[in-house]
Length: 268
Length: 304
Image 1 (tube, rainbow over the protein chains, first blue to last red):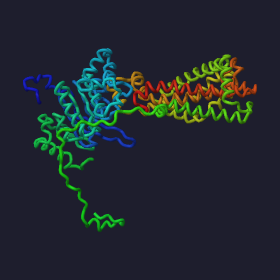
Image 2 (cartoon, chains in turn orange, brown):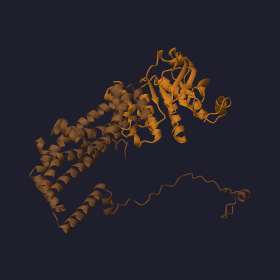
Image 3 (cartoon, one colour):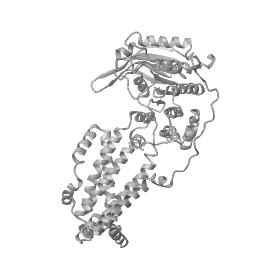
Image 4 (cartoon, rainbow over the protein chains, first blue to last red):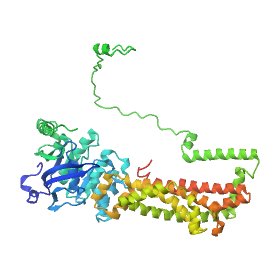
């Protein structure tokens, strides 16, 4: 891992934080029972930037919702620190793609402090922690603004701050930058990596962009579509923004591209 | 390249294709300071005044009052159509001698009672409707049946059940408020996005806390518009019901005041009563609800 010398790895870092064991997920539409993922297994270790990558219809978002506890697996188990996940909880905070995940009736600071207040943190402490984490995403001076006054990128930063403020065991991000313009997205990716460098949280990141996966992730789970099955689990820890566009970077992107599109029908 | 008026696609495609002109590149190493336009100049006073909604509305009211006054004077028949000044006079006299304030007080007390009970029942129905599918069907069926029914049509039945008096009035007001509020609140709850629901659940909220802290504020614009519609229904139903009876209930309300004045052929008094009905409407809509909106949905950017 970048910046992390080998001797500092403790035994705790070698036991998985989250274990998905042959997870099969299904959901009902009006007339069909759709199998979203079939027999998916993976382990996530502390400080991982674990990316779920695949074309639309590979069940990656459904998988993330199952980790969050919104969906129960039909078969298989998902365990966080050995405990099976049964329902949503503040130990797995989620950042969504949609900008309306912030509560419009609360200011930026109240939005960040709200989940803390819900979980028994006192007013002044919640406020202080909210301001602190807003500072980390460079939004401290917007703390008294209402969400509708912010741009899309700023709203996503607030959502990230809100999730980080809870100090969750694992941060779940569901295509958080998909609705942003390309320039803002690039900046946000960079900021996320800097934030990770600073705090070393564990994040599961869903995306359908190969480049984003290689840039953000240290480990990439490549899923095939209809239903989602594990195609490969790849390492990408040796890349950061400075490698973007480099030959090695492009090789890995090309490899993933072949996996996703050359056998089986291309999605999208 | 030569674009003739007649489209000759086959010819123009095989002819010279239009090419963009290649121009030299340039890079501005240092950007010049931005030249700001004119220093902002204040608009003329008239334009600034007309920017205020209140000013424009007052102007319209003034014009209407003048037209009314001129027409009434030309007609010269105070029994059928009193002038604006006569109406104002009647309004003033009846306010000073305490009749209108007392009647208004009676009406408002009944109104608030019916409004509160209606909202309470609407809350129960909405809770049922959002928590169970049976409740949803119950609410939609009842709303479809009763919402189109004019509340005043239930008055004969109400008189039969509750007799002449406040309970009958409250009954018809509850009917007029209940369905509008329940319907709006329910559709407001349904419109709360999945993202907001899921976000609330990841904070560990469930049950009543989830409803109170997430669903109600998220559905507040719809709830508020339900309350506004409910208020307007309630007020007009009350005045209409009071026209039918009032004194028998011990004290009459504003509707009864209008009816009394008609019987006495005090047409200016009738107009004064109607004007009071309108003024109350303007106050509730323009002051109370506007203030609530300014501090909630508009501040939150949920409504413009």
